[in-house]
Image (cartoon, rainbow, N blue to C red; front, side, top):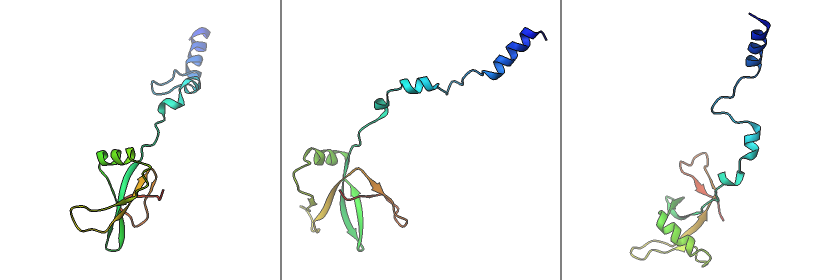
Length: 110
C-alpha cells in the first residue's frame, strides 16, 4: 500500500460521510422553527356524572367547532331539551391529565 493510498484510507475513516437520515448543525439552524409549530386547537367537552363520578365526554367535531365559534357568550352549561337530565358543565379544553385510576384523559379546568 503506498503512502497516498494509506493517507486516503485514513481520511475516509476519520471523516465518514453522513447517513441519509442525518443533518448537519448548519441545516438545523436553517430550519424554520415556526413551520413545525401548530397552534393548539381547543375541543369542547361536557361533564356527565355516573355513579357519583365525573365523566368528561367530548362533543363531536362539528358541535365543538360551533361552540368555538360561539365562544365568549358566557353560557357554560349543557341543558337537555328532548329528555330529562340535569344541566351539566361545559369546558373549552386544550390541556388534559390522566390519574392513576382513570382510563380516560380528564380536561383541566379553564
